[in-house]
Length: 480
Image (cartoon, rainbow, N blue to C red; front, top):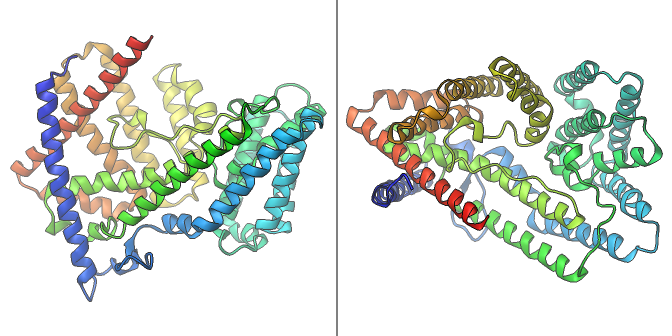
């Protein structure tokens, strides 16, 4: 292995020392904010009421609060009910014709659930959209027209969101009304892109079974139709053991979720960003990493819950993105939490292998669609531009040097700096442009010794990743 064990051991010690020191400092800053009677401007709004048995408030963003506001009891009951009902349909209704039991009944249950949870008017809207899109694609099966329709719906959801929100009568799930419609449209066109033949009755049922699949309809992500493998022949080897395994896996995921939420009571990730001047540069780097890991965690929990349910139903679920403390390149990041698989399948991947210009066009279209789907805000726009430039500059360097650049120590150093740029690029969308600019100003003012320490940590981080990846590759080759 190219990285020697001695260098790996030294890198482990360096990273461990600065991570432990940084966590202690972040906890001290958080405790100071907690004890303070008058919080600095902009800090108070970040703190929310926590659990009753925790004697301090917690930090987090509105998206996380909305995610947790669904409640463990309500979420658990809903998921358990779905799994039991889905399992009974698959296991006990085998005497009914296979196609009928696995598609039509599931579609009817999904429609009834959507109408009950959100409103019957909202159900009518979600039914009309797939029908209109299917008719449009049947009459004018042109890719340009389809993309124009997608952009039209995205613009409509941005300028007239109140029309959709008024149809949803569920105040707790109100924040999901517009995103669910947006995801529905992308699923509809995924089916249209994959279906090239004249539609039959079976294809139409497949269409509605795909676009109204309840786990992905509510929480996402948008999984392309070609990856949504049919569960027509789904059979349980042992119904109760598979159901028990699914429940145990979901229990483990929810336990991790509560543990993660518990940590937010003691480390105020967002509030501490107002006190950068009182922190050491190494702790600020750790804060940046924790912020992007926090954003990744939201994706992880949604993906894993959906994946467990889909696996139980016989589908191939989404693979959560690599955690942003184990990568070194922009190419390893995800484009978007809900649309990554869709934009990769239809916009980026088909063009990535056709040359740099074609790849650039694909990346540009990808980030434009993501920007439109996220509401066309300035923050998301700047995030998209920065990530687009980072991805394409990285791609250009890779195409220029290829495998010839074999000085691994210099390569590790450059990848460490690249990781720092990845953190900054993603923080523009997590904490906003203003706070990210403050981070840049902070690092511009530090001393040369502090700057060298930051570079050393980034270098050690890359060494650890290389060592881990090489060991994983060697293990796979040994198994093969």
